[in-house]
Every structure is written in C-alpha cells, then in structure tokens.
Image (cartoon, one colour):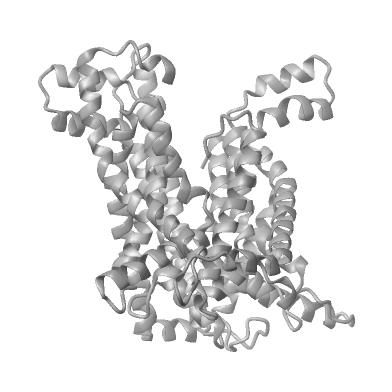
Length: 272
Length: 287
C-alpha cells in the first residue's frame, strides 16, 4: 500500500522530469533527448529573476515572521489562560480560513488602503511581503509554543535571580531551550512562502510577482517546457537539502543518545 | 496545568509575566490590522452595493444561484477527504510501526517531499497523463483500444484533490499514531481481541485526533480550490473557488466575491467545528 501511494505521489514528478529532457513541447509525446530546455532556462533572465523574487520574499517574510512570532509566543505564553485562548483563536483564523478567503480579504484591505492613501497601484513588493508574513506567523507561533511548554521555567528564573537582565536571560537561557521550535517554525514558514500560490495570486500586482504566480500565468498560455527544467532542478536541490538534513539529524540523534548515557540520572546539558 | 497556574505563582514571577506579555504586542497589532480588519472589510463589501456603496442584501441573495456549486464543492471535497482517509490510514500506520527510526524518517520525508514542489506543475503533469491524447490514453490506444475520457470530469477533479492533499492526511495521522503505545495493541491482542476488534476498539479511538486534523487539512483546501477544477475539470465542475476567483480577476464584482467568500468562510468554520466535536474538544491542530 505504502509503495503504491509513493508511486502515485511521484508519477507526476517523473513525468515533469522526463518532459524536461524532451525535444518536443508536448509532454505526452517523446521526440528525443535534449538538454535544450536547460540552456533555454539559463538564458531566460526573466524566469530567473522571478525565482529570485520568490526567494527574496520567502526569506524576508519567514525571517520577520520568525522574530515577530517568537516574541509573540513568549508573550502569549506568559498570558493568563483566558487571554491566551482568545489570542490563540485569532492565531488560528489564518490557519483554518481557506487560502482563497485570506487572499481575497487582504486584497480588499489593500484596495481600501490604496483608496485611502491615494496610491494607484498599491499591489507590489510590500503587499506581497505583508501577506506572506501574515500567513507565516501562525506556523512560527504554533511550533515555538510547545517548546515553551516543555521548557523548565525555573531555568529562566534562576538566570534572573543570578543577576541576568531579562534580555540576557533570553539570549543566554531561553533562546537555547526553544531553538528547535524556532528553527522548525522558520523552515515551515519559508517553505509555505516559497510554494504559496493562492494568496500571492490575489495580492501581487504586475510590478512584482513570484514564480508560482507566473507559472499560473504560463499555464494559461501555450506551455513553456523550460519550466519543467526549472522544476526538475528545484526538485533535485530539495532532495539534496532533505538528504543533508536527514544525515544531520541522524548524527544529532547519535550524539544525543551518547549524551544520555554520559549523564545518567541528570538532565544533561541541553544541546541545541 | 493551565488552571492551577493562576494561584500558586510567586509575585516576582507574576511581575515578569506581565512584562513579557508586552512582547506579544507587535504581533497583536499585526493580526488586528492584517487579519481581523480584512475580514471586517469582507463583511462590509458583502453587504454593500458595488456602485452606490449603499447597504444591500443583494449580494447575499445572489448567492442562491450558486447553491448547487456550493453543494458540489462540498460533495467533491468530502469524497476526496474520505478517499484520502482510506488510502492514508494504512500508510500512516505502516510508517508509524517501522521499528527503525531512520526508516520512519525517510518514509515521512518521501511523503512530505511532493508538497514542497509547485502544486500547479504537478497538477499539470496529471493533465499530460490523463488527457485525451495524453500518456495513458496513448498507451491504451497502442493496445488497439479506444481512448477513455479520463479528464474534464468529476473523477479527475477528485483525483487531483486526493493527489494534492493526501500528504496532509498522512502526516497528522502519523504524528498521532507514532505516539500510540504499541503495548496497548499487544495487550488487546493478548486478551483475545481479533484484528478487527483491536482496530475498532483500540487503534481507531486513539487515532481520532489525527483523523480530525487530517480531515480538516484536506477538506479546507479541497473545498476552496480553483486551480485543480480549472485544469482537471470542465465547465460542469465549476467549484466555488472558481466563482470567487472570477469575481475578483475577470468579472470584477468584488462585492459578490466578498459575499461568496464570507459564506465559504462561515461554512468552513462550521465544518471544522463539527469535525472538532468528534475529538472530545481537545484538538489543537496537529501539524
């Protein structure tokens, strides 16, 4: 069953990868092997710029969302339970709302702001950035929160009692404890941003668009097979990143289990 | 834990807590401006006239013409949800019961990997596979049979939904199942429960939170999709997402679009609330 599902999940990827080496433009007919699409891809500066746009937006949005979200998680964690559940409800809105509704509501907000501020063409880099930060934030908060709950709060209090300023206590103690949550939140935010189409589609103008939005525009016109080449390259990069992450985690696990043996009984030094 | 927190907190810590709360302020301001106010604007647009700006119920009453599209969207999303559950459940169980942790991790990544790639292109690849002159039909025709109508029908749209959102079902199921103590299942089997009984009385109840969050994560994007139905469907499979998209991008009637979005949003919240009731109320969304 698992194997059938994996084949099902990967068939389209294989079709695209094979299509990228095809001489013809139709994915369904094989006309011979070529690297032509790849050389076309690297000559297409417009397409590469769009890829750059996507990366810029995703990095900027996930970075800002990670900082804002981590701060927020600490703040929310320290709230009384009633206040906390009210805030978490608002946090859950963008998570449960269909993307299309989030996209539409932000598009209307920006249109409204455009009228108010008398800016004709408000949709662009900043609207896209704002939208991405908005849908990234809940992912960061939801992955930092559990780490705060797991953490021993006395550690921070000990640091404060021993004369740390709250800021020192944060950077010397707290941040190390919640780092895995921050990293996984940031990564999740980054991938969400990179792959987002629906929300970006509604809040981007003609001035600044990301790769998925352009792919959508492409798929309305006759297809450009160099997109498949780009896709195949991205696929290879992602596989490499995943393999590296996997290896890192495996070696980390090994270290952890060794560390556990070394500190039998005690908590051990908490590694990041 | 949350309840007991209130009383036994030393004063020094309480003061620190009050100070730390300020850290959430920028986030709260952000969420009010970019989540709460936009939703208020959606409501405002839904109840005003596009030209005069006067308050009207016209947009809301116009929705009655789209009732069948709404029902069809819900129906197709539910069917996809059910198929995802039937396919995803055994897969998640298989992964969570691997003894070797790194095997588990590799399988988990293999399931997750397709989600990192552009879903537009992957859906397009299905069109190339299923089209009348696509890869599958060419293979069928080369065997001397006549081509099958594989695309531009409800089945193809459901296939697209299942394909795109299956990982969203498997991952939360896995997260829940991996935490189930295997000794519980052994104990049930030792005490004479058949395979079916173990499944019905032990495994299934314990995996309900995973089922609920998986079903939510499949249903919400499936019911509001517009790309899948555009590419794999026909004019007969117009979904509510298509209608909303066209109101904003081609027909340009944002007021009707806002009204439809509002109804879609309320509907999704009701569905999610119903699903959450099945899991004893303590379901934090499991990612």
